Image (tube, rainbow over all chains, first blue to last red; front, side, top):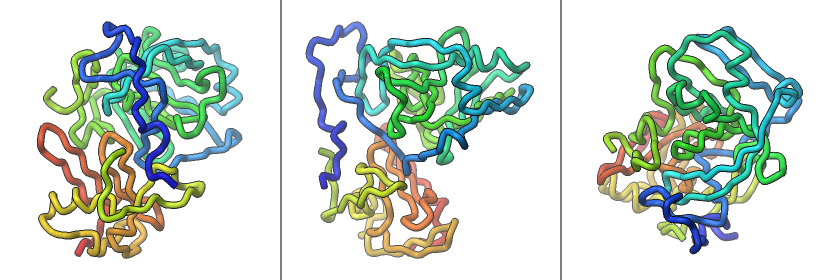
Length: 200
Length: 99
């Protein structure tokens, strides 16, 4: 067995519009799988999604979540490990829709995931049609290796902010660094400013 | 292909691992740089489940923004390494012992 997953052989897309590629990135036609731990495989009957913290707490079952209005999104994604993938197609529920069902006051969001991963975002970056809880990719259910059954999708920030296997958004009145942020990755992660690490 | 050290083996697929998983030999060079000595034959004890394993037997995830090393028994995070701007951030807090 090769120790390298198929997605890690760089397959460049030579005709990419350079204006769509942030500094220091290359465009790939593949969809590399990055993972810092075992792939969780939560059965849909056991899956829930919750909002907690500085908000009226609410939990959706999978069926309740899927009954929410969703939209199709075509967007470019940019991984801090330097690959970008253009025109990816997703289906998901906007975070606006989810937060629209609770009263909330927090200025920051900490996303919690199966497996213990966390990532932090300003609430301003997940509202106004900028973020989704995505359950579909390329016309199919989102595969577990890419974060299924559902992941956060925040395409204007580096892709580590688009947390795989997301299960809960905690609203906070203060910022709390997530997993990679606490190890020296940039707290915000704007790919167009190449904010890879703290201090960038 | 990312460089691996010491003849690192990919670990077999099972419901808890992926084909991107390697054993601790994969980070022999990284550990040598951090600790200044050969570490794959050292023993690490998991702070969560208490299981002692050779570093060479630990589960390593390289395909991530950093390197994450987990207990092969309970999958708890034992070590994290992130290199940025010429500095390597090291977190060993998941280990009860290393030696």
